[in-house]
Length: 175
Image (cartoon, rainbow, N blue to C red; front, side, top):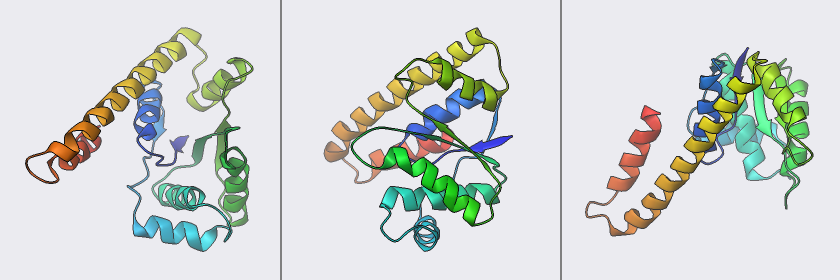
């Protein structure tokens, strides 16, 4: 199993950390580009939002790099994001892509279903190992958020225009 996930902000860094700790093969989609958007726009419903189109582009770019399983989160938030996981799965199926799509819904009714999906993807049944990986990924999330806070404070005050963004890009590349 080779998994991928969409480029949604910097959350992919935490997801990568989680699955690296669980020894799961991953394909990180290439950075979002004009090509990513063109692919997604061509293959998505016209009325779909920009994030859905970018996600479809990300998935197809990752499938071409060897991914056979897509991990995405569900939601019950203020937009159609929670429903789009199902829509994206159907779009890929209609395009003839035989990939597994695993939707991780928020564990608002308990962790069991959430953990069971992670177990299925990772092949790990050891709850202590899974919890260590979750804790480590959560620490990565906090540290990336702190880094982004620093970036937001430093960018308007930098002496050499673009230096902060170059350092952030180098960090992401190194990760």
